[in-house]
Each structure stands twice: as structure tokens, then as C-alpha cells.
Amino acid sequence: MGAKSVLAKSDPDSHVETMEPAESSLIGRTLSNLTGVWREIAQSAARTIGRNGQVPAGHDPAALKAQMSECLDARGGEVSARMRAAALGQTYLALDLAGRRRFLEIMAEDFAIDEAGVVAAIEALGEAQSAGRGPATDERVRLRALEDLHEATRPPRLRLLTQFNALPEGVKFLVDMRADLLTLTERAPTLDGLDNDLRDLLTSWFDTGFLDLRQVTWDSPASLLEKLIAYEAVHEIRSWDDLRNRLDSDRRLFALFHPRMPDEPLAFVEVALVKGIARNVQALLDEHAPPVDPKTADTAIFYSISNTQKGLRAISFGEFLIKRVVTRLGGEMPRVKTFATLSPVPGFRAWLDARASEDLDPAFGESALGGLRALGGSDDTMVALDAVLARPDWPADPVVCKALEEPLLRLCAQYFLHRRDDGQPVDPVARFHLKNGAQLERINWLGDTSAHGLKQSAGLMVNYRYSADKIEANHEAYMNDGQIAMSAEAKALCKSTAEPNGLAPLRRLGLR
Image (cartoon, rainbow, N blue to C red; front, side):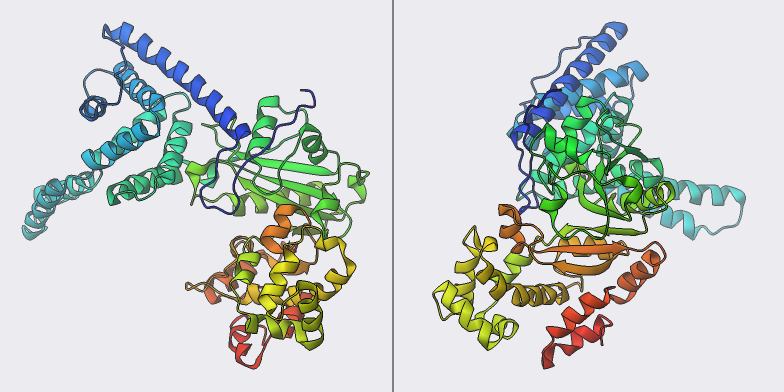
């Protein structure tokens, strides 16, 4: 493979990931291969049934609608259906972004539910029900009316989408089509309906019962390793040497796969086998550090979890993946008793920047405030703090670190106590792990001193701990009562932030 450098990937501050060169070239090759395969299917099928296999240009809305209608036409057999579906898919792949929007809008609007048909089916059902349930023939009429109503509520576009399932890489095509759909802004409500249809279809196909857990090693195919580099969403994989370090003897990488997408990881988790709970990600990923003997490790640290397919958004595999890996490692490595994450705090700096100075003052205290204002050159706490945190080298200054450590830890504890309108924590990573049944174990000072770590969380990282005998109880308490499971250390830090008017949320969290 060589030591070539391939960079990853997304804009972690955005809900819509941007396509960087590594991922862009990967997807480009995939689409090129898919176009070739489907062109061959369409042309071969056309020759078999004696039809013209020419694919329409796809820029004419009337031609697009006609091509979709032909796909829904039941004429011909399986060969003919495959030809039409492959030709339609090839048309979509050949379109630019504007053309794909037009394609999706036509599918959403012209092949939606027939409202008049639904009304007629409801009326027919009402008539069948009013006839009573006497003779068996009346009951059959009622049941048939129910079936007709069910069929009337199924939009034709759903049958159109399902046809791609019979094609090579057809499931992946639909996943990528939904990814395109999710990038469309200011879209019409009809596109929301199409998105719902696609999401429901993919949810049924990607049930966790269909997924396979596989360990990825340095000996895995180079094409798969390249995808891991492109898809890594938490800690950028900077080079092949970096990847090799993450697949060393004291590391594990597990990925989920679907039988219809055997070469595409759906989600993967990176694990470090260490002694004790890790506090700093730079130390954990140090390529020059000697590996730990896995036989002596007592802790498994989950330091990166990535969902890879944008089109499977809202279909989460993370909970299933973590629990499967905990079970597998626990069986393979009985010495490993502790399972924890080393996780980012992606929303902390944004939350901190939105605080007023008077909200920050109590966390610092009078003596620390004086030092902060002197360091930041302002009597306004927020202005001074922004000035200090804007210095890229501040973590290397012991004076600054001493002034900021305790106040920022207390403020981060406050951040975890804040809730959204729906009662969930404001931090997305916290929501994920707490819902999965983990407990908030510890907030780590200078856990990530990379430029990105300083920008998103002032260098703080968090350990969430998964205890096999508490996962389900923690999950139930969180989902039913909104209670956050915390270690004694985390509870103490949260209580230290409480002011008189802040006791109510602490009681709701079960800390009082």
C-alpha cells in the first residue's frame, strides 16, 4: 500500500458534512463503477427483449416522468423490469445537482399518494362496514376494502424505489440518493414525504438483526482501509502510518456491515486496550508510544465512533455497535473489566460563547477573575476569556492553565446540566452515550489539545463508562425519568457548580 497520505473528511460543526478530496474521489470511483454495471445490465436486457437500450438525457422533466412511469408499468417480465430500473438509475447518476433535485421533485410530486383514490377507498370501506358482519361474503368484502385502503395509502414512488433493490449495489444507490435528498435546502413538503418513504424503507432493510460485526485489521483489503480513512469523523486519520498505529496489537477496530453492502462499513468504532481510563487523546494516538501488551490491559477505551453513510441518518447503529463490542471483548479478554469512552464535548465552546459575563463570574471567583482579566486584558469576563482562549498556545502556558482549569471544569459541568426544550442534554455526544446506558464518569482537563479540540471544547474531553451490569438500568432511568447516571467524581463537580436557584435541575438529575 505504501505510505501515501490520504486526508479525511467532514465539517464537524455542521449537520451536513462537506465532501473532502479523499471521500470525494472514493465516491466518484464508486459511482463510475455503478454507472458502468447498470449500463451493461440495461443494454444486455434490452438486447434480450429486443428493445432500444438508449438512456434518455434526463434533463427534460417530461422525459423523466415518462421514464419513471415506464418503470411502474408492469409490462414484460423480470428482465424487462431490471432493464428499466437500471436505465432509470443510470439517468439519475448522470445528472448534475440541479438535475438530481428535479428528478427527486418529480418522483416526490408526481408519484405521491393519490388523494382521490384514498377518499374513494375510505368511502368503500365505510359502505362495507355499514353492511354489517353477517354473511361470510360481507366479511370478505370488508377485508378486501381494508386491503384496498392500505394499498391506496402506498405512494407509487415507494414501488419505484423498491425496484432498485433487485440491482447490484441497488441498496447503496438508495442510501446515496437519500444523502442527496438530505443536502437539499428549502425543499418543498413533498420532498419531506419522499424522505420519509426512503427512511422507512431503509430502516426496515437495515434492522440490526441483519447486520454483521467484523473486526478490521491491517491485513483487511486496501479498499476497505481507504474507506476508513475517508469516513473517520472524530479524529482525522492523517496517513497510512496513523491508520496502522490504530490497528496495532493493542488496538481494535470493529465495523458493522449489511449483506447487501458487504464492502461498505455502516459504522465503526476504534478501541484502545490500556491500563486505566485514558484522559488524553494525543497520548492515546501517539504513533511513537510503545504498544501495551494486550494480555496486561484492564481497560478498553472507545475513542472514536463514526457513522459512515449520510443517507442512513436517523438510523442509528451506535448503540448496537458498542454493546456488541463490549460483549465480544468481555468474552475474548476476561482481564478487561472497564469499558469507557474518551469523547469530545463538541458543543461546549459554542455554549460558553453564548454566556453573559455575569453567568461566568461565579465559576471563577474573585481571585481567579482578577487573574483572568489581567491575562485577557479586559474587565469584561467574557471578553477576557475569549482573548485567552483565542491564543493557540495557551495550553502550554502553566499560568493560564492554573487560572482556567477549575473554572472551565465547573462551567463544563454546568453545560452538562443544561437541557434542550425536550428535556435532553444540549450536548449531542452526551445524548448518545447516556441514552445507550453509559454513565458520565469524568471531565478531563486538556484531553484534546489539537486545534479542533481547543476550538470546539477548550480542550476538554469526557469519559463515559459502560458497566455491563448497569447499562439497561441507566438506559431506563434516562429514558423514563431523564436521570443522568454519574460517577461520584462527576456528581461532586456538578454539585460544586450549583447556586441557590440551580438546585431544582440537580434534584431532577437525582443528584439531590
